[in-house]
Length: 194
Image (cartoon, rainbow, N blue to C red; front, side, top):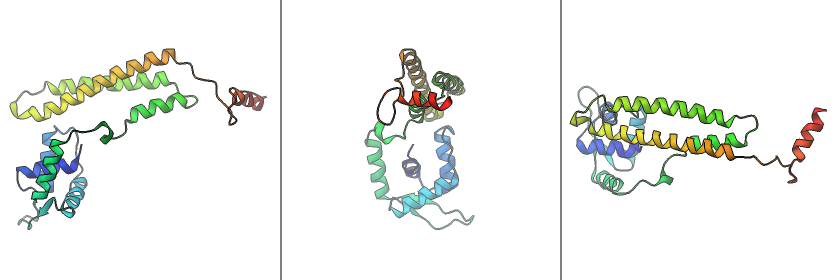
């Protein structure tokens, strides 16, 4: 999620200060992605530096509101019009973890898959429960976020099933020595144990 564009979208509704932005962001996403207030103010500082928002004079309570600029509106319009590329998303830590588990000695990859499957199933059950907790029209943005998370969890479970099936057929190659001779490391390890 782009905090930058999330804050711009919220400021398109009207002037807000940091704590209002944080509350509005969390309300819009059903607190699915809680924001640290430091993230909000750091992002606001960058947006102001880039000319996408401007700070206004402080209110009597000491709160400084921000408003979106024309450049900010143009950036927001472009963001909404541009599809999100898979390459723009963070690395998939689970894929990396399983790939490394396959090549790390002593790791029970099937156990890693099962542990993840159990955790993902618990998450899926909780998301499904939350999804049906409210059906008020004003909850639609939050329900759409939950739907996306449900679909992602379901896809992860399908992928873990695929991984498990692939592991059944997987036969690791014998370790190779630095010289590239299969089995040379195994023999060296055996000699060292004697």
